[in-house]
Image (tube, rainbow, N blue to C red; front, side, top):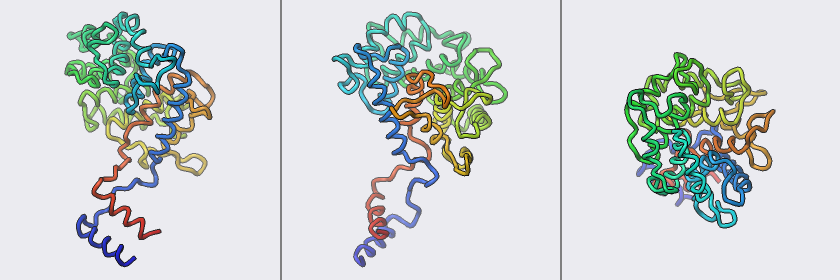
Length: 337
């Protein structure tokens, strides 16, 4: 023990006596998010159709993006059925889906293809980047003149694909923010909702808008005002918490560098503090799926598609253990056990 203590003193002299980066006990352990992600992903894999798809093109694309984001291969054997991978199924369905010219649909496919490491310029016989750029309207800065959510998908897709996002497109989306800090799905509308706000925050952050930007700060305040007493979010404050809205709110906050597990975001429920992540995890069912709300199953496929990125993301409260501090931590454990 005396030898270990001497080594420990030497380590302190070498590295200093500053506090070691350890996770605060008030945060939901990353391991819980990881296990939840694995269970949800296993459930999604069980839903794959014989052709490798998840039935709906939009969901297939969204999940392909989600799992690629977490480091898995949507073109690999793990995500294949009868020799048909998830990405191959998306490739088969892509022409009819993107030839509609809808920026949101093109964006969803582009996100999946780019995240999976495939070539978005040559996918299913289509140049997805060119198709998306063709929807851009320089006069307005919009990719879709009706829907802010789809504009956000377009911006996010370009960023993930490593393509420049027009400054006018960022300005146009910022201009759609309402006085209370939220965004709604309708371009030019006055309504706001949590889902659109969270995704737009994520898209703007990906396009280079920092979390310190006044618009982002207003959006953060808006989400704080919309948080429910149970720790989650509904589409709007008058609605009950649901998994999609809670996940999208978390994604927007994380993209802005906000720690949604900090004290200001915790809610007291039955004398127990509940973090937003803990509330999200409570929507997961025993089979691994995520239900829409406590009362409604809803579309469990779409719920999972929205939730997975919120589970696989790196949270500001997740402090990575630096390699050069690993040995000191082992020593500390040896001294306390």
